[in-house]
Length: 112
Image (cartoon, rainbow, N blue to C red; front, top):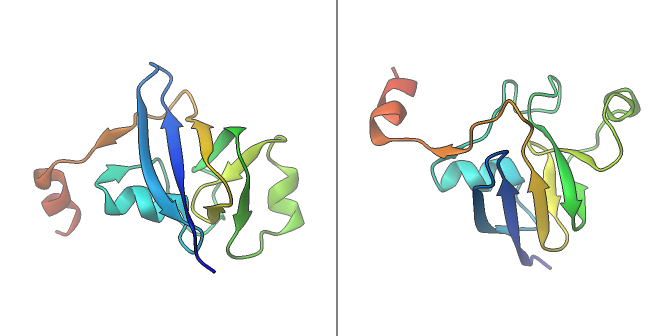
């Protein structure tokens, strides 16, 4: 059965962005649909650019992650491109991230 949970991402400056995310959808995909660009590169769990820290809550990976990839991240870290919520989540964005809504102009440029 598919459920939805509130997922909140907190930026270093304290800004928080929250959305309802289905247990059948990755966190990254849900935020993308709302127009927010989370820091990512490959979007398949290979590069580690989307790794963030879970402050509270539970998640599961929709696709299995290799033990090698999981060994390279700290406890409580999550690959947002592969993870789906299993409860309400509070996530701390890494320092390098800027969590912001993309403009229509930047969306048009991405498609060029």
